[in-house]
Image 1: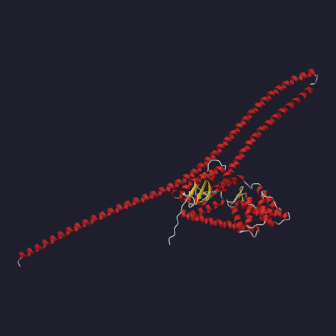
Image 2: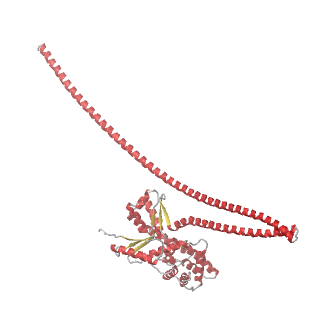
Image 3: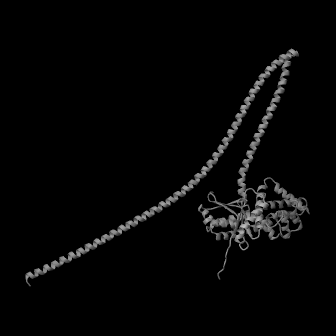
Length: 516
């Protein structure tokens, strides 16, 4: 092979090598460029995602801080409002004191002015008297030939008599002014005492307070569109008061048994956290059973404490109900136990059987806790119950005669009457107003319950509203309006009351079917 051919072959090989190198180099460059662009795009997307995530996180953190700030602001605002309220009350107190001081200063200035006027009048009279004394002395000396000393003595005696008369008149006037001022001060003291005790007494006898963990719980108690609170009030017959009082809910009812059932139910619902109509009904039924157990246990404890045996279980239950009742503001169970002890002591002093006296004294007021469908005074109702459940004639007569509605047939009747008077008349034992108030509410409930088809009746809002639950099978929808109207007319006819009474009739139809 010649040299030129060899050279040509090498040239061709070199050219091919150069060609392939250039071609594959460009391909790698293109691929590298694409890879770089891809990496850049991914980096941009990742950066954008990170930026969005950071913005979302920042917004969430800002929102949480905002909620925290609003909550703290709300708490501080409430604290400020309470502080402002206290300051305002203090300012009002200071204003009243300032007004009182101003009135007293005004009275003092008036009295000073009157005293100054009287002093000027007295001084003028004194000057006039001196002049008269001088003239009279000269006249007496001329007419009666009296010595100067004799005339002076006579004039001084006349002057003393006149001064005594004026002093007595002045003193009488001062006493009258002091008496008027004392009466005004006494009225102020009485009014202040009434204002200070009225709220506490009303709260003690008609309101129970349930503590809740947070303010959000109030919304759950109310429920959507108020269904939870309506269900609770309808089942318990107790008004639920939800106001600005922090972390507490008030339950208002004149009936202490209903109020205690409602208090136990509300405490359980708040503790459990599940609050809806079905759960409310379940908890209320459980609370009713619990109260029944407390009533039974209380009655048994009382009979054991007083050593009374052979008593009917129904009578024991009535005595347990006394724990939740009051008579003229006096706890009925404590009053009955007190009458029982006093009756036993009186019987011992008279040489009679203290066991019979103690038994009659304990049972003398069971008529006050009887069902609403019984008629007559509580003494008559108590005697009927005692007869029904096997009490002896001496006990029955003592119960019936302790208010002189029935003729006493034994010394035990007089003993129970005397013990009842002692227990009720001791200082601070009774308050008439609350008893009259409870009696009026019971009368309203009895009137509404007397209609056919009425299942339950509750007087709420201090007797301003009567809620009547009817049996849906007996009272159709079209008869609800007539029933409400008839109840209202009956209340207007048979009772006297200030203002208005709202009658609300509630009819609830439930359909229950069992799948087998």
